[in-house]
Length: 168
Image (tube, rainbow, N blue to C red):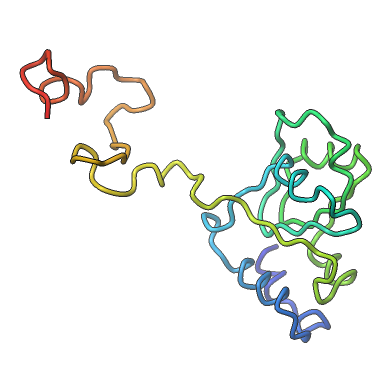
């Protein structure tokens, strides 16, 4: 459906010179890693005091069980994909979830729209980037065999503990 959205024939929204449309089109072509998800808690926080505006997310909207007050979700959301539980909570609060072709008919130039995106560096892979793990002043996470707490002994013996010979 992403290809269909991006390759629509030149309709009124594509002909407008609005910067909003250019930004949305650019984000539609982005890879999935560059379209991070946004939680409904973040939407509620960002849309506070912006009644009557449409929230636009070029990506996925996910549920957040930590958000207790559903009354803050009463707004219109436009997104590529919405998790079922998040959609149910938004609709139950009196809001609505629309698609990009519906948005193109309602706001061709992006007027009264708030464009949001998720945190790009929240992917786990970013914890491994930077100075090599083990060198001084490095906070990079090492790629360890049998990680995720499955293998206790790997990379924790000589050179890693003072009690086992020496510590680097």
